[in-house]
Image (cartoon, rainbow, N blue to C red; front, side, top):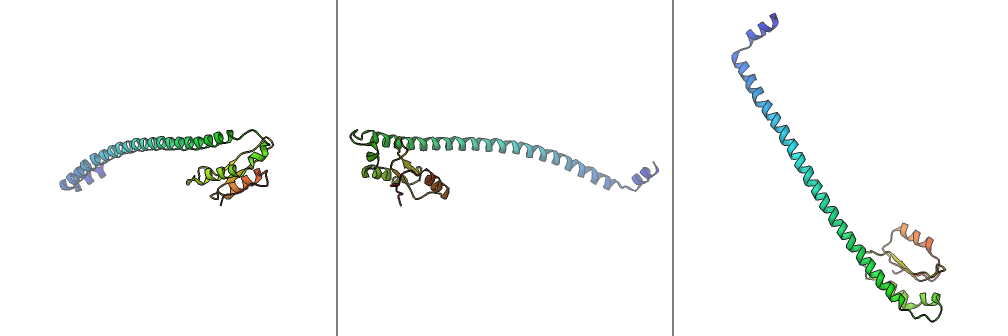
Length: 156
């Protein structure tokens, strides 16, 4: 107690008031800052989740449109192939020049490289094939492994 009483005697009133005012100003500032930061964090998290959800929905719609477009183009190619007259051997028909040109046209019209290759095979696994140049080395290697016909051509 001796020490405490001696300390209180040496402490002047202005020092005590200064410390009390300092504590009275810092404590509310710290509490309000904490509350504001927490509230802003929640708002930012909600906005980020909303943004990510909208981005995912947009990408989903874009991908769906892309897949529908590709499917429509392949359906058109299939309908063209169904119109081949049934005379002659199927393997010879698959190697006709017009069919190869149709494959090349299908791939050349594709500026965004949505199709890397088109291949039509008969029951023995042989048939015409066309591919575009914008290929990764991995894709070229995979297509090379699948190659079964010697007259396949690449579009350059």
